[in-house]
Image (cartoon, rainbow, N blue to C red; front, side, top):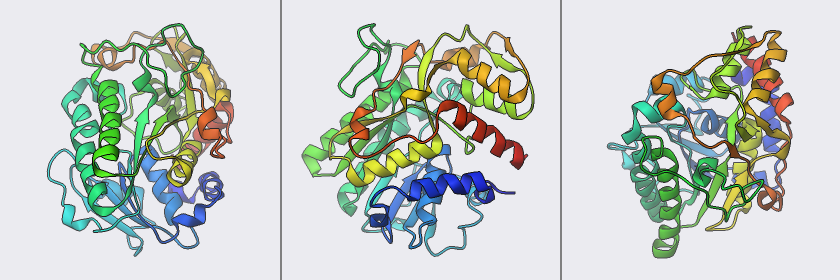
Length: 348
């Protein structure tokens, strides 16, 4: 069974398709970077599952990976694979001359990638972002920048949850700083292109996102926990687990992206998170151990993993602003984890 064929995943897509005014995307040209990634792939599936689909231009470095993720769509006239590297030479002539939306969801998003490819991490968030903003300026596309909770840095102890105007501490003189600092620079580029080239851009600050579309090479703690739970193994916690973060199930995150594509104001940033999913890392580990019928064990991380770990100990998002656009998360953390483990278990 492929993920798209799982009844729970199809249910997830249907929930996305019920977003108010979703029909406005019918027949639109939507360019997606990171289209085979955890978030971009679910967005593409949703857009292609509409009664009158959008035209999806999926940018990726691997044709085999793209075909493996989208076997249902590879022969569809609505699906166009654009083979290229955002940090090298992208074949711009294969993209539509005019586009309606450009969703920039490509980025290194896990510790080992930060530690082993720090240059690529920064380049995708800055250099590639500028190239894509230039394309948005030429094509007239609304630019949707998928940023991150990481831009807030460490909680200074003066707030419970980060609002969009908050700015915490980041030690910029570290290897790990490449990800949050480059996401901050990517947001600043959006503002520059809004002012100087009249690009219509909206910024999404996503909480830590999980779900059945997680990638095999994802080394985030939660992703490792999920894989252990699916395999019926003990959950390996590589710290005391006191870090408290916001999490979002991937279908809810994609619904938030679509909501902001349609209704977000140009130049504004929106947190995508759900307060019901604000938990500690240890609570996550214990929840997944309960699902698997196993236990939590503790283990020290290796040096590569350690170099890529976030130093933030409390990073929870205030999502009231996006809720005013009509978005509301459907799944609590326990519901989302249960769905994820069940789907991945069924897929083998």
